[in-house]
Length: 296
Picture 1: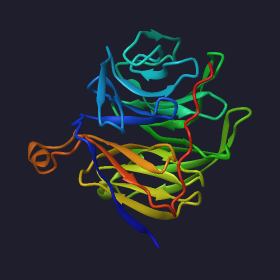
Picture 2: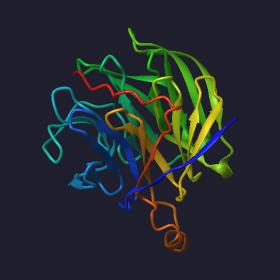
Picture 3: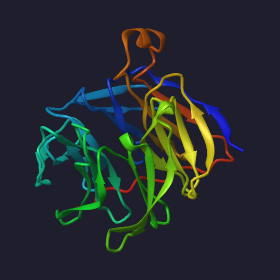
């Protein structure tokens, strides 16, 4: 039986498109971004303080860097950021046209590689790819061509990789060989009915369940490794974009949301859109897992 839960507002951020939320267990802080706002945010759950760093271009995704700072997927390609609000160093990147393509969703695998998918802005064909940035700086295209990459996760046993193509309303699962960074055996983990929302960002818990944000669906779905819907976390705003487990015990789920594609009337009715939301998951739900850091 599917369990229904409700999240509450943690920060009235009113972001245009909040995304890529990550817990830093060392600093005990939550990092997240507003993509079109060209902002990176740092939220302290203990105090409620949220700091903002302004970027010179859109950041689609990032991961913590073991050397400090972040590895990021920007509009123009890969970049290193030495600290929050610090210097941005552009790196060698995939050969794509930044007028039509940008990085969108990504995270590191347990071997410290940075996996990041792109999005094809015209959205008229599968013109985007998922790339893997190795720890030695080499990169290559992985998985299959897509329109808009989302939902990239790695199971805690490192054997399953997930990927959503948002406009096609599908979340795939793949077998994953972490030694060689190879995906295989693509299958549909869960498909979605467009009027009820589209798959966006995701994270996993210690049992391998996928927590998937549903854009235009006002919810996060907890999906088992075999595709069963175990729980639904409802939010009072429509556009849910990404989620992460946070806190010492990784038992609190935080979610980013967006105001984009909402009319003035809708925003008046849902003023908390674009905020950070949170829910303390009941103890019968497994905790999250720590996000691996980039080891390059």
